[in-house]
Length: 319
Image (cartoon, rainbow, N blue to C red):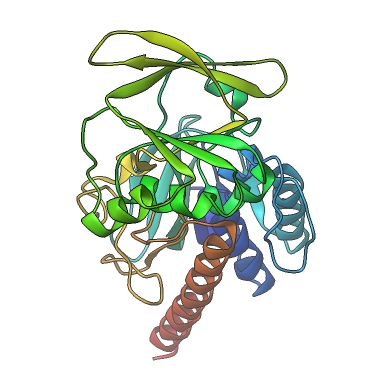
């Protein structure tokens, strides 16, 4: 095996969590490799404007990702984007990763930060207006719809709680839900029903999104009557669940029933030498800032693990 392909740490995923981990690991003089199956930056690059990152008035997700990537590389971190992972071995003292090009990379620790994705409706126009009127994060984008009329899709706790939260900005919020009753806790339902800004379209689904440069309207179909009509709106927030990108980790690391990676306070998993960070982990809040925090903790804990391992190996050689 090529010794040049051995690293102190390999990070899987180059979103804000993975890039932060790479910054801390490489700055600690650990040989670090980040691999990412998509474009470097993760979901962050899809965000048109980030206005709640501490110390930064406003920045696009693409710009922030670029700064993080360049910062990691400046400390010596190697980054490979748009690769495909063929095989992954997390057990034993030496971990290994095989890419589709046949190259095998080994390391003392692995940090898993593959991120995740909001569950989408999968209807015409949705991809066209992501970040241009369609959002999956009220905290990120709610302020952009101040004084405007918006639609919220979903019927669980997240949908109703976020709909109430969005009334701080929007002049009117219309909840579109496919069933005749909500799946949320009763207190969440009551809070939404008692808010004068919130209106309801039950047993209804969105079938298409329309607009020019930005979203202007949606097609809504009533599931009971079969009637369809065009509904004018300034924006649509979709809260129908979240999908972690952990399909490739099933059977390799402990996941919960939603496929999220289970971690301890130091972001370690049930496998020694394997840590996790970011949106793929079991957590309540998913923001760029929480991903950065996770990546920091995982890198610091991982650095200690590697350094302790090196001391142990040196003592064995000495003895």
